[in-house]
Each structure stands twice: as C-alpha cells, then as structure tokens.
Amino acid sequence: MSPFIISHEHPDWFKPLFAELEKKGIPYKTVNPTQHTYAIEEAAPNMSLFFNRMSPSAYLRDGVQGTFYTLNYLKHLENQGVRVINGYRAFTYETSKALQLMLLQQLGIKYPKSRVINHASQVEAATEGLRFPIVVKANIGGSGAGIEKFDSIDEVRHAVNNHQIDLGIDHTALVQEFIPARGGYITRVETLGGKYLYAIRVYTTGESFNLCPADICQTTTGQDLVRNACALDAPKNGLKVEAFTPSAEIIKNIETIVQQSGIDVGGIEYIIDDRDGEVLYYDVNALSNFVADAVNVIGFNPHERLVEYLEQQAVLKGEDVAVV
Image (cartoon, rainbow, N blue to C red; front, side, top):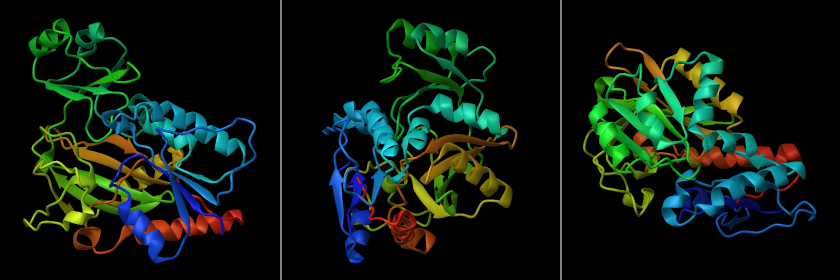
C-alpha cells in the first residue's frame, strides 16, 4: 500500500492523527509545505491520497511561503488525478474570508455585516452603515491572527493615522461588525465528508479571537483536558468548551456550506447575535483541528472517524492513500 501523504507545518496539531494511523498500521509520510519543491512534468507521485493540512496561520511561524505555494501544488496534484483531501477549491475558501462571505451570500445564509478593503485608507469609509464595535480581519488569518477590534470611529482614525492597520499577507481585509455573543459563547461545528460530525460551544470573553479547539484545554465544569491532547504552544486563553447539538436547520446550513466549498474535513463557526437573536455564520475552516481530549468533551474520538474516512477515500480510488 502506498502511504498516505500528510502535508502540514505545525509541530503538534496533528499528533493525534498520526497516532491513530500508527495504531491501525496505515503507512503515511509527512511533507512540509513551507519547504517543498515539485516538477511540473513529473509523473503522478506514489501516493494513495494527499491530505492537505496547511494552515493559513503559518505566517506566524515563518511559513508564509507555504500558503500560495500550496494552492499551486494542490492544483498540480489534482491535474494528475491524485485524490486530494481538502483540495484546491477548499483551500481557496480557507485562504479568503471575503470568498467565504461571498459564498454565504450566494447561499442565502446570514453572516455579520461586512465590507472588503485593500488599503488602510479605506477602513473609515467602510465603517459607514456598520454598528460599532467593528473588527478589521485580515483576509488570510487563522487562529485569530490579524483581527483587531475598534469601539469607535476615533479609535479607527487613530489606528489608521499611526499605521497600525495590518491587512495581512494578501493586503486584503474585512471591516465587519463585532457581534456580541448571546450566552457568551460561539458554536463550532465539525464536519467530515460533507456531513455533520459534532459540535462544541466555546465560551469566550469576546476579547480573544483565537478559538482553535486544539488550544482550548478546560471544560465548562473546570476539568482540565489531557494536556498532551492540547498543542504544546496552546495559549492560556481561559476559554472553556462543552459538547452541544445544534438544530436540524443549522446542521443543514453547515453541511451546505462545506459541500459547496469543497471542504472534506472542516469546521464552521456561528454566533447568536445578542442584539436581535440572529444566527450568524462567520468562519469557514478547511484546516479544522478537533477539540483537545475529544473523548472527555464529546464522548468519542473523531480521529478514528477521520482515519476511517481516509481509508474509504483510498478504497474508492482503488489505490493507496497519501497524507501530507
């Protein structure tokens, strides 16, 4: 059997996946998309399946060069007929918050009121018609990176005049209403193969934008999650998590989003606006990390389901699967 190829650059996030592959005796290899090369004319590589785990937040770890490179390489692999999990279309949405909202608009699914800008000089004009507080979100972020909150137009002007607006690595950003979370939580729904897998509520103060489930290491009852299930660099952010089951309508909306965006393994986040009770979908994640110590939080190990899915995809192709 050819190995699964798993492409990733984070040192800790995918250790539970590797452990499950090793437990089942499935051969795999890893590649680092931030230090990689390929030949345009080469034959299809020896892999059963390629699993794209490149993170948009890699630029925080000296990996900015992996982002746009990965888009090119995914298209190259797909042109060769390789089964790619979270391929070119999925990663295109992963690397553009603007495209995510355009998809939601097309699908008639509600999201926070937003504007798209490409220069700091446009932030003030973009706030017209928005309710404060607002946030400026880099189009390519990840793990809460590149998000700044402003409570007034004076704060916006001060930041612009002092060159404190960072539009991120593609010089594009959203100017978006900050949504006060009813109940003090957001909900993250994980999907696999285009279908609902599980959901969690993440309780936040509203001041932290890093809601990565692998970085949340405490339940709402105060129980500390097994530390080796959390990323070693997980911040002490005080976030707490609990299992939750959304309504059938919300699950349907989320399955529609991931199916239309080509996301094989992904998480969607939504929030209930405390001002009017509207359910707003605001983040589409193709790089979706399962919650730390999942058995204690949701009652099962999602990595087992993930590896089963990868095996099924390999069998459907009639060839071995590679995860990078």
